Image 1 (cartoon, rainbow, N blue to C red):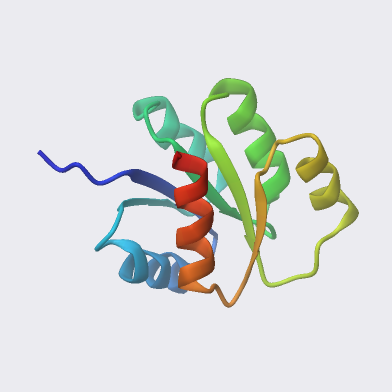
Image 2 (image 1 turned 90 degrees about the vertical axis):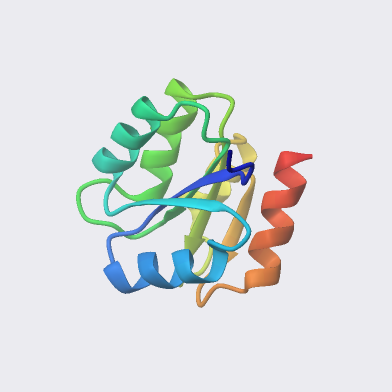
Length: 122
């Protein structure tokens, strides 16, 4: 049996999903979704996923709103926002409310993401 920790990564850009999976599949079981609705569907089928990382800017539902829904339905999940943009007041509020544990920047730094995931798991 595979003992790798499962991670859900949600991003509306296929290239980002592919790059994330390529960079982290050796260490984690990476599951991807290309929007918030699909991400919630994945969690409904796999409620044991402990880590959820989401892009901020997505059509229909942004990353903070998606992660707010995740925390309401799956409070055990550790959530992170990954974005190429600066921290917004909305992201700051989500950090204060413990919706997200950490703001991660794009282009992503593998070491930074690994450290954040490991600290959330411990």
